[in-house]
Length: 157
Image 1 (cartoon, one colour):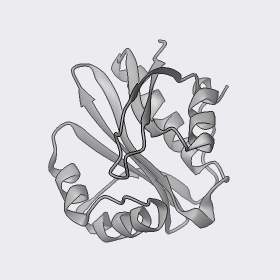
Image 2 (image 1 turned 180 degrees about the vertical axis):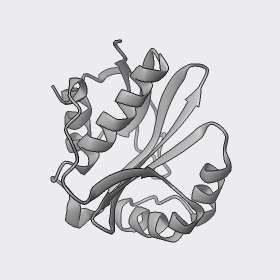
Image 3 (image 1 turned 135 degrees about the horizontal axis):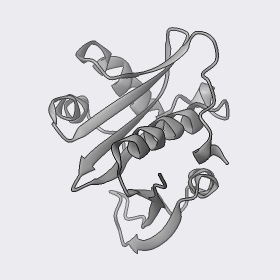
Image 4 (image 1 turned 30 degrees about the vertical axis):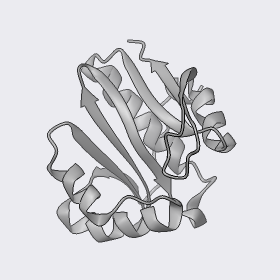
């Protein structure tokens, strides 16, 4: 199972926290990956927030993906996960999720929560592979009115 293994990163790849110098690249990746992209200011605010973490996946020297999460009240909330379209289906999102789950496990967290578009079958399938399960729905959650599926993962020690 992807959630119980920590696959080593391919040679030259790395996961690192977002730095101020990364803002433009992260925003550019967001804009080509999402229909309702976050603004550059939104990412700048995430960088300053004491509850936020933005983990970047670098493939060689190219930003291939990111995962933004919040640690609130002992729970991790995944806010945004994006992969550069040309880098999809190469394990970028899998490795970012593995990284965040491993960090959560080490920190003693009990659960990880997220919302995902009901129409995003590939993302839902990925989360289910990791052991996330559906725990409700948020009606008209997205700016275009689409509903979100609420999913949760129980972190096992």
